Amino acid sequence: MERKNVTIAPDEIAHQRGFTELIRTMLLARESRPAACVDTFGCQQNVADGEKLMGMLKEMGFSLTDEPKEADVVILNTCAIREHAEQRVFGNLGALTHTKKANPHQIICLCGCMAQEDRVSKRVKESYRHVDLVFGPHALWKFPELLWQVYESHGRVFAVEDEVGSIAEGLPTLRQEGAKAWVSIMYGCNNFCSYCIVPYVRGRERSRDKDAVLAEVRELVEAGYKEITLLGQNVNSYGNDLGGGYDFADLLSDIDQIPGDYLIRFMSSHPKDATHKLFDVMARCSHVAKQLHLPFQSGNNRVLKEMNRRYTREQYLEEINYAKAKMPNLVLTSDVIIGFPGETEAEAMETVSLVEDVGFDALFTFIYSPRPGTKAAELPDPVPRSEKQKWFDRLLEVQNAKSAAAHAAYVGKTLRVLVDGESEDTDWPLSSRTEGNRLVRVKGNKSLIGTFADVKITDSNTWALYGEAVTV
Ligand code: 5AD
Ligand code: SF4
Image 1 (cartoon, rainbow, N blue to C red):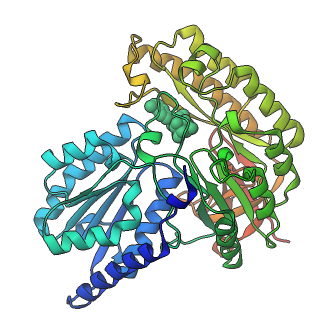
Image 2: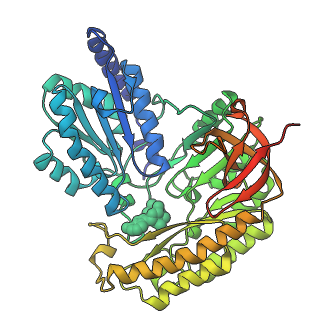
């Protein structure tokens, strides 16, 4: 891919600001300040996109609400990774017929990964006629122009053309309150894991310029953010499209030079691209959290091949052994899929045995969900759901015991955590995260929110740690 074609020209971004101004002027003439509601589903990349949409809406003069019925503009920012996520969105979309009936001027928008799927945009066009604007991730930066078109035409607008994808710098971002910030370092995916829809909806891999990333991180640290998570579908292939040999490990090293009291995390990583160099850099860099989310998906080599993952069980184990040797306190998490088409019980049990052998701190577990348009969706899938569920339950049983044991080992220790908000548990009113990203519910004063604090761990279970803030 030619780099020069990837970045949206600054004058095009400025042109979008022109539409923002047009909308702002139009809205100012109204009696009351209009409100917008952005409902985001799915992964952190979507959350980051949602913050950009909110940034754009704010510049247009909207206030933000969580209540669709109070909103003049409602946006569903969707996820396509599994069927269940899509069904939820269609349910929510259906419910919006009522809010629109109550407020006929309400504008309803569908965006995100689902919107980029042909199948979905056609269904919305035909059967969800109350939806005014549909745009995929490729058109996110054009949201002001698209919304203006809806206002101007009083008709429906669909911006869902398939693209290799672009990079839009300089979009406004409304970061959520708190000490945590997301920074996308690259977009898209080239891997085409056979079960996954992402490469079809988010285009090809493209890396942001390193100076743009460094400037954004520096700005966030200076603004007081304490935890910055670098995002990409596969951060380990950062830089491949830039040429010049500058890679993700180099980027981490450079970020680490930025002075301040903050933590850097990153996700997701692909084992086929994780290098010893990356683990060496992680071990050496004081700002980089000793935490790794490295999805292995399956513990069986035939299934891995069918998934097009391009590593073996043995290679995966070698990698994490190296990483653990370099970082003895490394907190390791992973993603797993059970019930890939054609997977046998014996093969699924190899996944369970890998989980047993490695001892992940936490695991994100999924039952395979066919995604139309992907290779795996074409494969015969004879095993009934009920059988897959049994394998899945066995996996959970093993992992839950591991998580509980890993958490119990913290009891009695004093850990430095980032207090990130209130918790819903009145006995433990604060919520926080360890460097390894373990959830800790804390007894302590609200004034700790947004700061690093020392917490003595007193209790634990499978899902969380519990402790008391230690005053020094
Ligand atoms: N079915 C089930 N799980 C999936 N994932 C991705 N695609 C599918 C699918 N079709 C899981 C993978 C990935 C995580 C984000 O979602 O484990 O790492
Ligand atoms: Fe999907 Fe694989 Fe790309 Fe991750 S690396 S987004 S699982 S295709």
